[in-house]
Length: 78
Image (tube, rainbow, N blue to C red):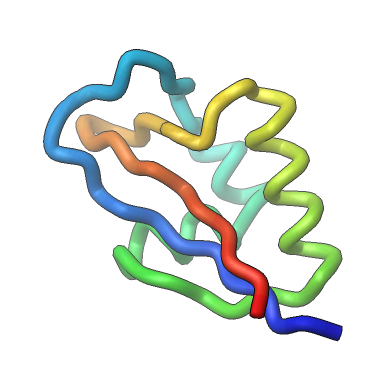
């Protein structure tokens, strides 16, 4: 099975479309918390990768706001 990573980039300006992440969201999706805390990539298992990707897809954006910062969450398979 291919390796999976989830990452986050800190954005300098607010994107046109985003949604606000809550502490509860980050508790339920620790891969997002790790990505925005570490400002980089984190390797995750397939189930966590798909669960997190589906959550963001359902929200309609991979751009998020947490606190006063905006992030673009991204996914890589290799």
